[in-house]
Length: 352
Image 1: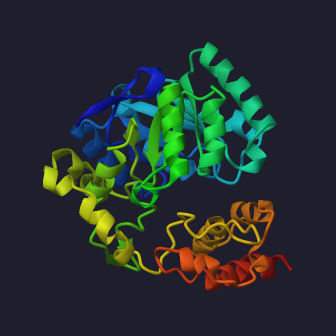
Image 2 (image 1 turned 90 degrees about the vertical axis):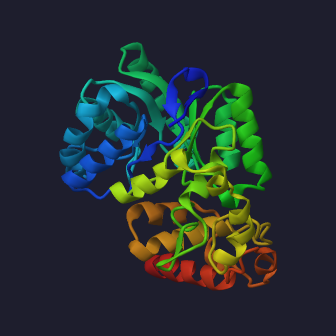
Image 3 (image 1 turned 90 degrees about the horizontal axis):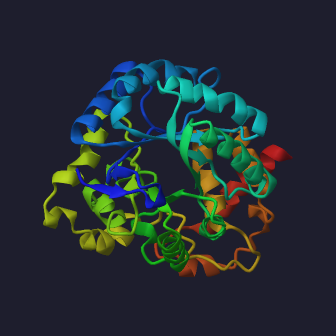
């Protein structure tokens, strides 16, 4: 394992970290994943689940006991706001609960979750920063960061000077996006540590409809770690997936070569949206990537968070005039018009 500095925090973190969002929530699996990770020299762990006394009780009943024996070897990022809830009273209640669960009432990094969402900009972020600065003054957190999905909004947050750490999604599908390049450049200039989430594009780069692609986890991680970032946090489900990600550390130069992955990507992912926005601009100003992402996530069930996200979009999927411009631009051959119809059916029929 190699280590990098997490921006201006000065913290040394492992190149490969761990995202916990998709961990199978049984005690043995969690213990096995952490043992494999720590034994490899992994140090950075992102803790997305933040309600130990409510919705995330099962997670913490099993993960807490597995985590605490390794606490002194880890750099932990705890989220402020998560799941369907982001209001300040909820954050105030859950955040100290997680600090207690990790064993020493201290997190190296506090992450304000999804700061690019409309209801989390402005006043929510300002008030959250005030609260987190108080936690820092009392010695309960070390540094403040934010997670985001929109590069333009993330760029504003970085340029504000408030963030020590940015958690953002970079992967092979974003390699030629100027907005992402500009964001990385700003992080370099501001010395903001970059934590890369979604290095496998939510698994799409590795597996399509149950069939593996020709792209390997090592190629994906090699690409993101070729960027000016500090660490990446693949979301392992079990110890086997953790080992597959950690294989990057001992891979040969040939195995790390992501050139073939870029060459094969459009063939491997044909017909599947990777939310790259090559389809834009839309004449009706539809946020096509968000629409398709919502429809994709809704296949596992529509919840209040997805409904609220859809409602927040100023132009709905039903505004699609089926001009076909987006499909001509799409490098993956996605049937965008059908995806718009699906999104409208899922979210607007239900609302009606």
